[in-house]
Image (tube, rainbow, N blue to C red; front, side, top):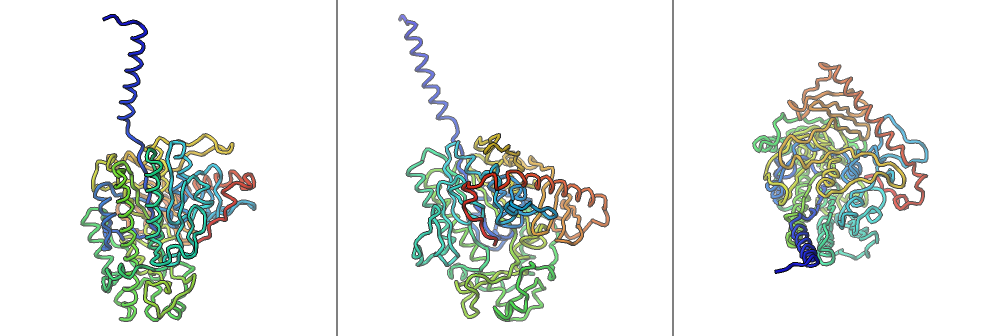
Length: 558
């Protein structure tokens, strides 16, 4: 048969079109992303991290993915959220202050009310050009509003039993919305599911990013009665026994090998109510210090055990709601190509304060009219095996569980990853997974390199992610980790030095034995403090007057 040049050209075009279609069909779709953040959850609260609390959804994710044994947060909620969503240390983006450094007049102060420089964009703004739709449900605690920072839909709940301050897409919902049977953990999941269903109906061809930020188990201790009933009398054995049992499970599963840190009864947050005031306002069963359980009176033991049952119930319910969100993603046929990250914003909290409507001593523990915190005794148990609590830079304040699951991309199931990593690593990880990149400039401002590293190499094999250093500073507490050496200080107290390879629970202070190492690490801490302060000085707020991020009121501190 004769084939003319015109026919040949037409045939080639047809073949190329067909081939391009085959290649396009074979090319893997960009992964969906689900970041789940708990609030004030201890390192060992989840079952898959040694806890006795029932967390089958998290345990299932861990069994089908990897668990990091040395992941860190910032010790506080707003600074951790800045790290999660920007990829920078919070001090560099004016979302926390730096000890020894002060921002000039006219700058928004570092901390919960700090306004980010314009070059410090949030993750959805990087994902949008790639076709991602982004959804936020739960706690915000970042400057600006979700919709001004790249999210397509947003839901902010009220208090655990108080629906009056809910906002959807920035608009306050009617006072009666969801009032009957409202519980914020359930409502947070409900709206995440609502956004995902809407995505499936209207944007099924696009990948999604869901940022699911629960308030649980942050104080006040509020939980549904049916969930509290699951843990009735479970904690009468006391925090000393619970700590020992958790450590035994942790070591048995091979998560960590270390000694159990000692209780430190003299260390409590400086904003806590004095123990005398706690007893006066709450009752004789309240305890303000982490003393040995055996030293408590019978009335105190019963009250303390009842409080921990509510903490457990809050996590129990959060796990149920995580399961519902995962079931929705599965129903969409998207679970295999959805990468899930789960973490806590800081360690468990020793805070004991009374806010809002106050505390009614006659109300049932865990109900809406109560206002309780677990206190330093149970906080020490929740952070087993580590020292201290939320806001401190010792391991109890900054160590977080990190579970990563991705059926299509992580073949390791149930394995541990022992590299020291940080929440600043999430954005670089998402960048590598999606192909997102930083622009060279934003509003004519040069964009600094991200502080974090991609965790993707660790998905295949342990030992692949190595930071030159990790750095902390919050509320006067300071720390730096280089290799296995960690230098840490409790406010104005002297530096302590620990070898975390041998002593993860920080029981043996080596500062006197290695003064040269203390000096070296202190200089390293100061060097990075100066570096982050210099970044915080870039883009003075007056240069961006009127931008959307500054129109929104800065989030109030916890």
